[in-house]
Length: 280
Image (cartoon, rainbow, N blue to C red; front, side, top):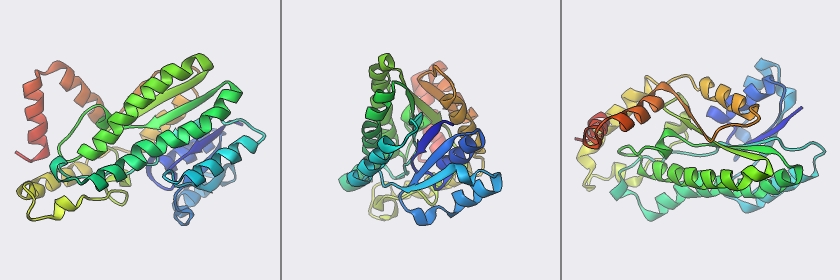
């Protein structure tokens, strides 16, 4: 039985991936910041008949002592760690000029530095084994900016660069490092797991008049988001692929956006994005 550790497993892609892997015969170490939020995963696993294959562990990826404890737990287990899925993260919508240094650092502490810290802590185990998959849940926002999500996009762009470099460094050792880049899916990253910058609610902001139309476009887009199980299925297939490629773009909207940027003149593509955001 293969073993995977998943961060941010209490909801969204993390929850679905935990259940999907367990159904495929994996042992899953499902980690989350607050174990009191395990109920949804517990219920989904019980309904799928795989609860016994899932372990629940507390892990706040911003806390070094908890990361060290998880790494120690992995090192002491009899079975190897076949896969790490770095899924924990949140969104911080807000216009770039309004985002404070504190807000931006908070976004990076989780979406970038947290995932990096967990990966570094578990790489010695994979080096010792001589194999393993490290999978980063990135986003189409790691390839393409969009008005109102500069902080989130910046954190994912950083994650993409670090991960691509790590892939080249780990490849000769037998450790496969992969990016999964979902488009817009029906998870709670833009609802319960979203924090809003103070600037979005500041009537004195230079962008105050743009907020209602921008918010309306975001909410309208939420109605058309795809089934997130698609992403969990892709993750499972990637983890069972002996030699995975670097990037997996998931979702028709994500693939279309990259295609349009590639074939359209830059000016037309930029104007299209601005109009889609409602800020013009």
